[in-house]
Length: 83
Image 1 (cartoon, rainbow, N blue to C red):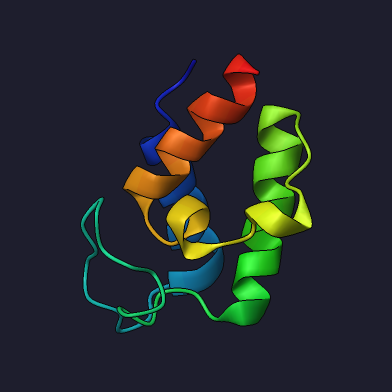
Image 2 (cartoon, one colour):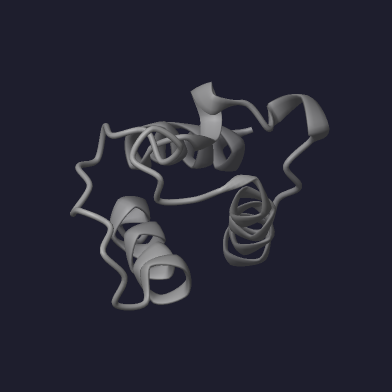
């Protein structure tokens, strides 16, 4: 599997940062705390994950533990793809 973190980081940079003034974020940084993605952006991120990795993100899975950092997303994607 291609590097999940790199692919998601590129998506976020291309679709949410777009030359903005958001400070660079680390893999473990919370997107919400760093103001990288807002609530609408999370829905777009979910759609991106579903289309890119071929699974459905269930409503109960839309929690920070799964989607609020690159580290969390990588773990979540790997777990979903393994099931």
